[in-house]
Image 1 (cartoon, rainbow, N blue to C red):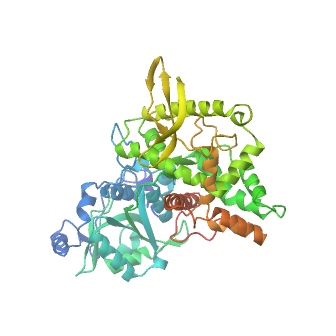
Image 2: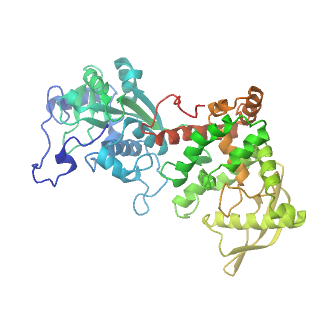
Image 3: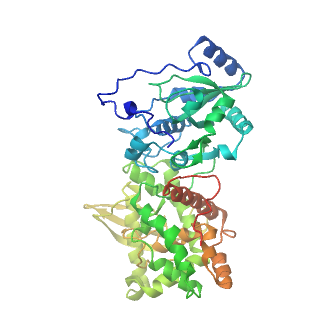
Length: 519
């Protein structure tokens, strides 16, 4: 495994039979210690050549790995902080900051502490933490590729190269190791390794061809070659929908559903029409499926403990409404909605008049809006709405929209909520196995529609009837979706790819795994 402790002394310092250690002598050659006269000369020349641009942001946040097997986690924490990526959750006190202890979604910290972490799961962690990641196994790249990418990263502060290599090839003790590369000397063709195991070796320069040889080694834990990865900030606009990460309990059941259950359901020869397929997909959903897909605004508020919303957060409900309407305009949504309501009509459909239904929905949305404005999305206990009404109004120069307003009472104190846009497409919130949450906006049908659109297109190849397959593929195709919704769906599809990979022993490859939902 890539960062397994290299000796009993490192993994169990208390062992009486093993003497304690204070550092190691850096094998030189081939290495050149960074603090030596030669190392300082290489640094000055590389700085003059413009290939030390990323060094300063890395050094500003550099840390030593806190456990012998945490080199992958420490490396990633340094790189994420150097890129100024906001983790979106607290580290300590009010501060948001990446720390090794927070990088636990793709592999349990106890497992990493005992066994180390693989190349693929470090890449998966980087993605789950909000970075863009490109991986290069030694079998998929050449020394020239490494040199080209390192030159680009070393000349910029927007990208950092992480090396996964075997120490033995560098004459060092230990086995697999991760560290960020802090710079490049083009004239001498040497890379600066900022070794996160500073208790063992200081930062040092290494000939790039030798580092490549150390990358071109097999990790015995996976049987795959090591390599390098490029980690950078995401450049696309912030999105609204996200999947929960690997540490959420709902992921395990949903991963099995997406990878195993869905293909098996589609293989059944008795499946003869689209509604039958949809019915089976709904009936076999795990009980906690509704917790799987979240809206970013709700996740942020929950992670921040209901703190005051930012300007971006205040704008999100309007963007969310736009995307929700686009979801509800799809033919897939209409069929799922029809199926759910026909099978299990809700009380508002069967026993209330139209006027009563609208009033009830208005009251529900008013209470939810109040919870939203107060920063408390997790509960609406103690809130009830009176004097609710619905109608049409001009909203954000977008023409007439259905809106609701009302007086909301909380613990005896009343206040009037501002206008809140609502969608007119769906006023029936039908029961299903999707969620046990009290908030019905967005509805279960919204969530199921998004999930089906986000599954990889190869999923539907399991349908044996060619005509039915073509019909269903057309139904779940993203080709004709509006651009905002298409971006959300493709973003979520990439997230599912990473999360699916985290379920497996080796977590990430640049191409979609051939095993993904095969028939």
